[in-house]
Amino acid sequence: EPEVTQTPSHQVTQMGQEVILRCVPISNHLYFYWYRQILGQKVEFLVSFYNNEISEKSEIFDDQFSVERPDGSNFTLKIRSTKLEDSAMYFCASIQVLTDTQYFGPGTRLTVL
Amino acid sequence: DAKTTQPPSMDCAEGRAANLPCNHSTISGNEYVYWYRQIHSQGPQYIIHGLKNNETNEMASLIITEDRKSSTLILPHATLRDTAVYYCIVRPIIQGAQKLVFGQGTRLTINP
Image (cartoon, rainbow over all chains, first blue to last red; front, side, top):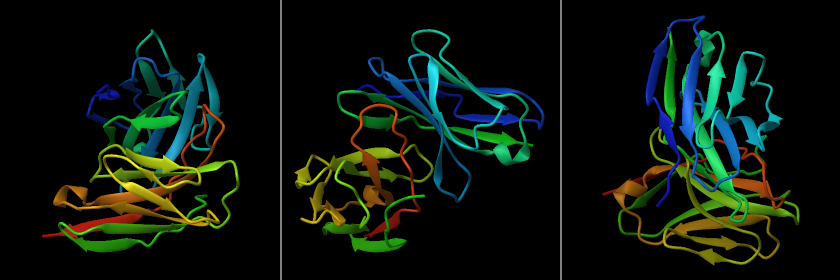
């Protein structure tokens, strides 16, 4: 069964550094999402992406964040200058329009020191 | 904010049916009820969704009350691997880029 994949599984970085989290959505899916989950807290929506542009973004998704679909398969989340509070699990999800069900990847654990 | 209310935790014996309730009293006619679960810190896993009819798949059954203000997710024969946080989410029918709004969910513990 097709799956959403994410790399790396764990990323450790220094405060102020840039990080890029990568996702490969399911191949025939058209909508893509990033969510995050700070340890012990709820899963929170960050951004949705369709047709090479952002459809919706949350208050969390400020100017430090950007998303890109650089080729036909990858979907990336970039954090320009990481802060301690960016430490969280980051989940990518994708959806096929006809089924209207989001499928999530296994997540990337980002640790900012 | 999430439009659903769930008990924070539940226990169930292995092999028994686990019945997880969800209240969504403000649901509108154009909103689905979705259920996801999250095992430890893994990505949320889709379980089932419905509009107004009861639904069943290989994982679970979803019972939605006639007034649609509440629903119950049923895991018919719970196993230890079903220990997880279960999220009930209301989401508009409009296809496409509709985000999921997660609440705190119900932490279900399956006991041997």
